[in-house]
Length: 270
Image (tube, rainbow, N blue to C red; front, side, top):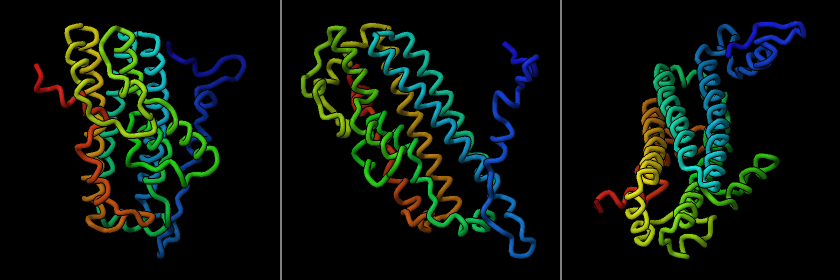
């Protein structure tokens, strides 16, 4: 349905989406020493990262709903929403292409003005990692206020993987108690008994499709990580990251470490 541009109450496209407020949020901090105006490329940097945060919000919204669908044994509904998540991840990867139009010199023109601000401080991305079960290499402490509260709740909560395993268990597949009763604050590790149950569930087309879509999700996140690492290397090389992080060196350690290792371990079992 097309949103009407205006109705008798004065409700408009701009007021519905809060466009004036949205467009006021790109506040540059850099200043060209000659003109006194912000460096040209800082606007792109801000817009792209604000868009990332909006997509992270939508990903959390969708993945939380997917957990609810799995808890309600709605396999088809969960797969449908997972496909939307995959499309969003492709969009995130595509936005790296836009960032890579900025040369190292152009980024350097405003980088020093960012002070300690860093993408490592993205609470929503940490929430995404926690929801996917990546809790072994991301710390929950150190974040204060409402963001810290949200992060600690995510850290203590079951993950998407836990919802999937409990779904299989309710469907009658033989899952070990160690997997069903695991400490959800820990990382997800390979389990041969879990893998045996997953291989068995592939005989059901619905569960097989769900497993493959979850694998697509894991692969999509890994693709995003790879493109992010290469973008950082291309932009700052081996320099320290903004805010004193290890930059590309740290990001490289996150590559090829799947969130759902059992889904990859079973590939040779068929």
